Each structure stands twice: as C-alpha cells, then as structure tokens.
Image 1: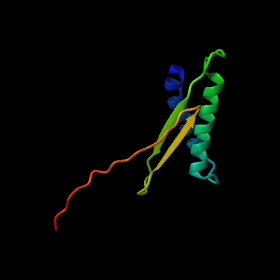
Image 2: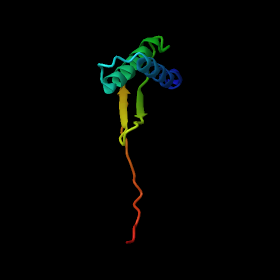
Image 3: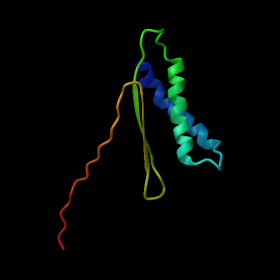
Image 4: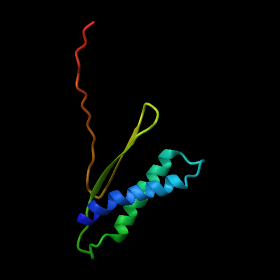
Length: 96
C-alpha cells in the first residue's frame, strides 16, 4: 500500500526521536527501539485506509549506528512478507 510506504518510515523516525528524547535511563536501548517499531506497525494497522478491502505487508530494516565499533540492525515484518539481509565483503589481496 502506498500509505504504508509513505507513512511507516516517518512514523518510526518520529517515535524513535520522541522515545530517545524522553528515554527512561533504566530501559535498555534495544527495548526502546523494539517498542518504537512495534508501536509504529500497530498504528499503521489501525489507520491504514483499507475500508475492509484488503491490507498490506511490510518489511523494515533499521540500521542504528553506534559510537562504539559495533552497530545494530533491526529487521521487522508484518503480514506474509519475509525479510532477509545479505552482506558481501570484497576480498583484498595483501602482499608482505
């Protein structure tokens, strides 16, 4: 659905911003991010203009950069969609 494509990214972004502004220091960052994604999917489900004639599926890949050497990737899907992530590292030859 065009509605989900245009609305879901902005909704997740807004919820993450709001949650991090008012973040409870006792909650883990991972829990906060998962809550933002879940709430966004639920809100889309409640507001999507389908009028009972169907719906949509959605997949989200969210990359959260970190100041440390590692970052996190969150993958979520709704409906009968499937998500996967693949990586490719170009090998380099080194001479000594």
